[in-house]
Every structure is written in structure tokens, then in C-alpha cells.
Image 1 (cartoon, rainbow, N blue to C red):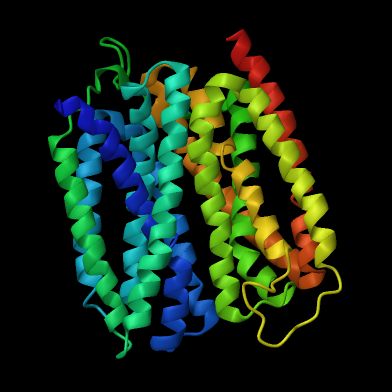
Image 2 (cartoon, rainbow, N blue to C red):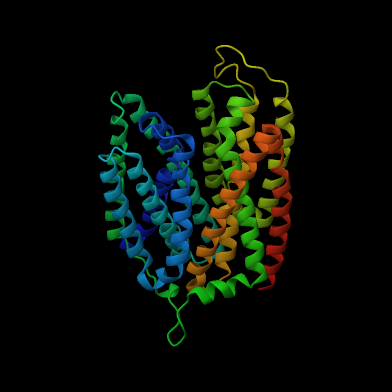
Length: 407
């Protein structure tokens, strides 16, 4: 295999590995409460450690990455993750976990900019760009699923309260292997650099992009999508427990259906987008999400706790509602691909930086709105609110399609 051919598996592997770590925070919060004696509000700071670090990394490093080099950045990120994971496997304390998630957030912010900016270098034409973007995001969700079961296995084998930390030694080995993969990969980054004689892209370029109507429509769609995804994903275990009355452990396990559905949707979309066209596919997905919400949530009214509830007698909503992930999944990677494909490759890093920042803000706000509504009204009301951003996303996508078609 030629060295250039290693770039795609390297992109997929490094992004999936960071997805595993970024989405392990819920599990680590539970372990921190159980073994480090921290309160729930203290444990919740782990979420802020990773999310705020993503924003900081995107703001500080996004526009500098083309000059530094995407491949070099990926090697540095995977080596930093390997060192951090190995260290945390021995540092049995909560403050060490906080520092580790700061590191993970910084690495993810850098890697996401490098990953999305590199897709245009290896797959420059729009159709193949969208296909690879969906594939990378699909394997990202597979990485999250693998992380759930990997952490679960180590926790199940733990008899001392420290044994579960051995999972990070496995992560360290995987990160080292990914760094080696990047070392052997070859990535032609010439197209990502500014043309000779012109100023290099930077914060001015990011601000210039913000002034474009197409950028506003794109960032609005991204913000609203992540608002929905994080709102549902974060609160689905609580919904399963308090609305569907599933047992605690089963509530968490059943939420993995949503993650699996996202993975299936993104992997499937990589083949469908070329056949249907991106706007038709995404508008159809939005309609199917709305239909599932309207059909499923009414069945959750009036449910009561039942003794010894298991997988075979759980409410049907526990299986059907998370399937909205199948239809949500294509939105983020495809709309990102559409916008990046329409830009010169030297401007990709600035746009991805904006994308990462607005994604993080959407996730934080979405989780807060869903939690507030859940607490003040009901879980059904919180999830019915999904319908509002769905309509706004549809309007943003139609606007985006018109603007990119004119460009």
C-alpha cells in the first residue's frame, strides 16, 4: 500500500479514538462519584473541562494548523493522548481526571480541525468528500459504542475501585498505534496553504467567513443540530429511567441504541447522498425524525413502574424513540461537507474552527434547555421541543442550498 493510501485509515482511526474518550465522560462521572467521593456538581465539571477545552483549542489553533501541518498535528495529538492515558491509569484522583479531560478536549479540538480540513485534500470532489465525511463520522460513533463496552468490561472486572483505570492503558496502546499509522501516512497539504504572495489565513479569514450568508446558514444548521443531538443524548438515560421507568442500569444500556442508530445512519448516508442529492436526503431525514417523535412520545404517557422489568417487557418507546438517531446522523457530516467542498482548501481550517466552536455552544445550550424543561415540565415536553429546531434546520438547509448553488 502506498503511503498516501494510509491517510484515510489514519483519519478514521484517530477521530474514532478521540470520540471514545470524549464520550466516556458520563461513565467517568459515575466512577468519580463512587470512588473519589465528589458531589454531583463537582463531577459535572468534567463535562466543562472537555467542552471548554474544545472551544479554546479551536479558537487558538484552528487558523494556525495549515502552517504547522495537519499530519504533524495528528501525530502530536495521538502521542499526547497516549501519554495522558498512560499517566491517568496510575493517577487515582479526581483532579487528575479533570486535567486529563482538559487534555482530551484540547486534543479533540485540534484533531477535529485537522481531520475535516484533511478530507478535502484526499477527497477533493464534492460527492466523494461527502461520502468520506459520513464514513468518518459513522466510525466515530462506532468508537463511542466500543468505548461504552470497553469501559463497562473493565468496571465489571474491578474489585478494588482502581482496577477500572486499566482501561486507559488499552487506550494508550491504541493511541500509540494510531501515531505510528500517521507516521507512515503521507498527506499532500500544499492545497491547504495560502497561495504564494498572498497572506496566510488567520483570524481575519474566520471573521470574513462569518460575514458570508452561506456561513451563517451553515453555522445555524450545525448549532441547531448539535443542540438536538446533545439534548437527546445527554438526557435519554434519565428519560428512560424517570419516564419509561426502566431500571437504572438498563436505562444507561438502552441509551446506547441512540449511539448505534447514529452510527448506522452515518455509515448508510455515505452511499445514499450521491444517489439522492444532499438536500432531498436531509429534508427527508428531518421529516422522518418529526414523524418518529410525534408517533412515539404519546405512547409514553401514563406509564407506571413495574417490578423486575427487563428487555422483553420494556415499553416500545425504549426501542423506537432512539431510532431518530438513524435519521439525525447524516445531517452534520453532509452539511459540513457541502460547505467545505464549496470553499478553497486553504480556507477549510478557518471554517472548521468556526464549526467546532458553534457545535460546542450548541451542545452546551441544548443540554441545558432539555434539562431545564425536563425538570420544570416533563420528559415528554423536553423531547417534543426537538420539533422546533427541526423546522429551523430545514429552513437553514434550503437557504444554504440556494446560496451554494449560486456560488
